[in-house]
Figure 1 (tube, rainbow, N blue to C red):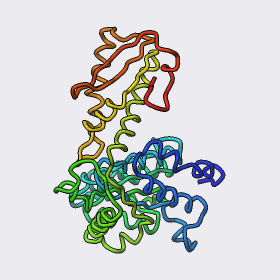
Figure 2 (cartoon, rainbow, N blue to C red; figure 1 turned 180 degrees about the vertical axis):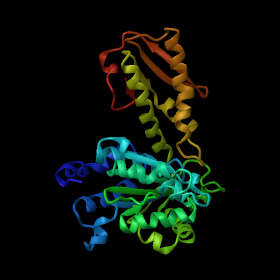
Figure 3 (spheres, rainbow, N blue to C red; figure 1 turned 60 degrees about the vertical axis):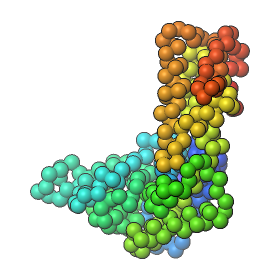
Figure 4 (tube, rainbow, N blue to C red; figure 1 turned 90 degrees about the vertical axis):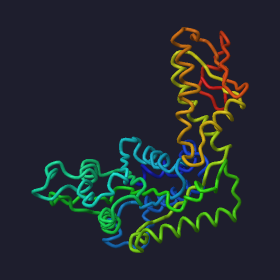
Length: 339
């Protein structure tokens, strides 16, 4: 956490993360604000206790598939330059009694004692990390109690009696609490929320959190950041991100892609689900774009120098081929010409 090293990264952090996480500008700004305070040492009263706490404790709340996990990944890449410093725990796997032993390590005499805990071993071996506890509300209360010690003291004793230091980690918890309204007749399509509705939704989420977690747990969170549902325009921007990944792979073969506005909107509609957010989008692109392209490559129907124009007609995608595409099409694009 050297200030000189991080200052340049943090300065443009909101813009850098915004290139990966679409439609969540307020959430990104709040996250970056926490990082700036931590990097510059402005974290309130400076005591031995506060200085040993994690660098940041964030709670990401909101619907499924809106970018909570992606923001955690982008944050890791920004801070540490390596997404391998990111570790995620699916807390639905820690719902049973004594599940905390899997995180911290089994006590002497119990199965798994020599292996250590999944969480404590990961942080002991790599202290500089972003640790994500996904869907924290599904974990057993004993797990919450264990996390409470990390959030307060920044350290934890594992099953083998070793003290593990969490003071160089960023702790992120995610939750879908309070978002059931989106699955019970709330958002049936793409969101066009107004400020008044946003306030109501935030109140529902905050009330659900207070009903689930103890006050001493919530009080140790630096910032509760609520993610908004995605609009159609924002999902189209995510389409561009996924298509660009495919384009970069095709670029190695000298092949370019042009995605029309109609095809872009069609993929956004096919890849968005009110219940799962933009998570189905990757599968939609695999099914409707990558599979047909793979088939044409296998048949050598597409060759180096070609430009593939992807359009939409009669509610399905079409793939046109133009030979001897100009070099402009063989470069990573800024707009919809990709390749």
